[in-house]
Figure 1 (cartoon, chains in turn blue, green):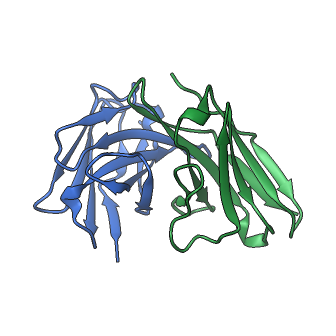
Figure 2 (cartoon, each protein chain N blue to C red; figure 1 turned 90 degrees about the vertical axis):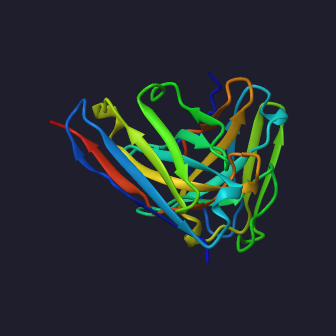
Length: 122
Length: 108
């Protein structure tokens, strides 16, 4: 069974940092692109970042570019999101999700984790 | 940046057909996915490549995409279909993925 489990969320002050992790099982992790999606309280889904299976290519939404860094450790089946200079508007549930298609990122997210909550507040 | 527009809400009687639209400039030239999200749960992929269904998704779910509008079609709507639905595309021009704002489906 394919599983994705996020961790690392919490309460952080504006300007602070957090590192989210997504540990996966049940599939060949290194073959698939992975994506982070967030959802602010009572709001819709928002794409944050995508990373190819090899880690060679990264994609970010404009509002997090330069502040967030996505990475992966294929030997540990884990995806990361390093979040720096956090703002109140970054408060959300952060989901990691697996791409449907192997090798090339399609953005079609066929398996999602349950999410981890990030709250940015003083 | 590319924008996807969905109606905020739609109400449908049980047994009828729900059509949830997703508008975008020449969206017919893109590949659309749809996600269902129930309260307190993670999203679930219900349609991809405009009209393909993942295994385990009811055949009552289908999709279409042409011109400036993509549509998620739910036939014989059931109470269990109540959820928020999001369309999703890749904007090749910006290398960004985009979600629509979501449509809350209510089954009367």
